[in-house]
Image (cartoon, rainbow, N blue to C red; front, side):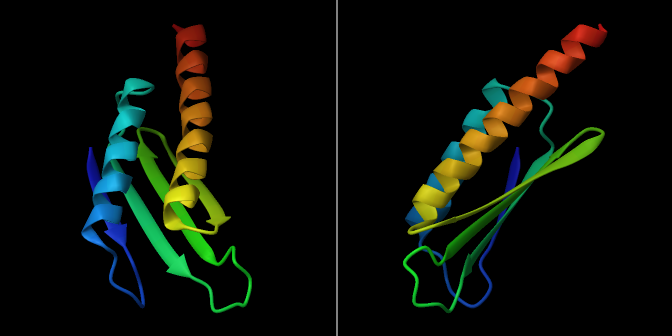
Length: 100
């Protein structure tokens, strides 16, 4: 799967990008038809601690899955997004099996 990480207004750490890629690649065990993933990392200019936004667009045949989470760190936001995508992919695979 091709992963594209975009970080407007700041430079992401290489470790963070590898962390995100590793997490996204694990999604392929739930659904093997993932084409690519676009990841957007944004920092909100607020005084709140939950100012990191992680948005993941997962391209799969027939549809795109989009998940957006706010968290204290990009790692936590990524984890939350991955859990959400995991559920959606399992549900999608289950529905496809029902039609076969």
